[in-house]
Image (cartoon, rainbow over all chains, first blue to last red; front, side, top):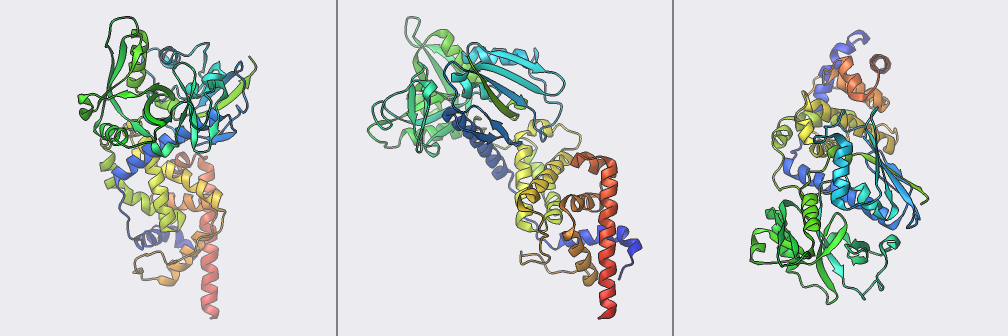
Length: 302
Length: 172
């Protein structure tokens, strides 16, 4: 039996022998990467859903509380992004101009109005104040532009009447998002929808006049396959597949011959500025320090 | 919401997983005492690292960062699961024991399992991963003095347990 004096010397050997008892598992980098992206995606989707229905909830690695229950259309909300403890510090610097300038450009591209941005320099913390109706989009400012293909109920089916986007509600598995005119549309449950990765996006003029612009996107191989699979599905008479960018629904994708190669157009009635802004959003890489920060939402009266 | 990334894995990540996942698992299984929990901890730690891989891969010691995540996840796990000591030699598919001093081994590992999770983590990082007290402190986000005191108390408890075991053996 060892005496008490040499346990410090023997402990490494004992621990090694104990570790040797376990057969080593095989970890797949591919599966880990896919799982990481999937969980990150659904974590953010959960945030969006909670924000949209105005519930109390938690999010992020640190479990920050969303305190935006029952806000009114005229309310102002402040979204505060704080670096969580597992993120490497200091965060990567955003592109030239700093985080404030980066956010201003993103806010402009998103078309958000009445937004105030405050950056605290002592430790990474950024407060973005804006309209309550824009809450979910304010929360996603740090994320890469996001294009998804959604199953949408056409107007007049369950749930019934279209509502203004400040009155979003959840109907069982359904979720309402805004379209570009500010009207709610009814989106099916998350599992039916596809997240698409955009390789390239740009604005193109399709017809004469100020509203003749469209957004042309090129998807990667997986995105092209998802588009092909989902758009080919037989869906109900009152359902359609629409595209959304950052939680705003823009309409049905226009599938041309090039769709086989992952090229898809949407929103044929854009102005040049609108189409350019959308393409810019889809091409933005996001800012990882904001995308992975814990967020807190506070509501103030209008 | 994030865009779906390309189907290919970030450069360098596959090599990192291939080279270091086994070592991470061995640390995790000593801290957790259960292969299934250990696998989950390593999987989760690697997933978190992957989300920041662009930065993590540029660090001087990416593995140290992943180990830090692993240690934090283990602490979270024990906070959630409570402090019930894990069972020794449970039926988890471990290979046959080839260590010659079986009684000694069982006594030390049993005592280790009964330590508070943080204390156990300090001992594993210090005496299995061979990290310095400063490195352990940085990894766990605690003071060097705390590492010293935790390690000293942990070793003292192991010694007490060993003494008890030896007494029982003599009286048997």
